[in-house]
Image (cartoon, rainbow, N blue to C red; front, top):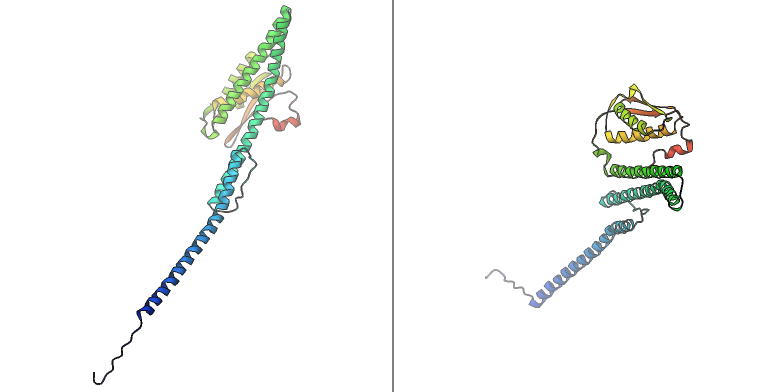
Length: 272
């Protein structure tokens, strides 16, 4: 126009391209650096996270190989810590069960050794000699009694295996009268006891109903009463009593024998 000005600005296109290219390089460099940092942080984090997992894997492998003394550090409160504590508990339970199995086999071997040796010795004597009819009768009677002892031990093995296979919370409980079961057991023992064995008396206090396992109660009473009758005084007395205490009943089997030596009391409730 006549009174205005026209200003025309311009720049080479190459400068614009150079500026854009420089910005692209900087953006690409920053992106590459961010990616490298992310990868490094990921590797670092994965190594930190994998340490307890590696330790648990190694510990579980050692436990599976039979090293039940292995324990895994379980300080963290997260999932890794809970898993480590679970593995440690499993190892402890396996260790306890394996110790019990070894004791179990040792007890069985010890209990079977005596009757087996007796049967073998008397049988060899019968085969190698010509004993008198009285000796022959005595030997056969001994072999028969030792065979009965082996049969009783085998029956106990089946009972123990059944009890271990059934958790206590799965037992079928039902009302059962203690006195009734005790009298049945007493009759069974009386029928095969020696003439001078202790007399079993079931007190009136034993006539109490409990919620329990009838077969289990019978096994317990049979074991206690047989031992009491066997080791009590000659022509002595074994008495069964019961007393109610709040939510349970205490059953007592008392004999008049010499009792059990103090050093043997801690082992009283071991197998066999």
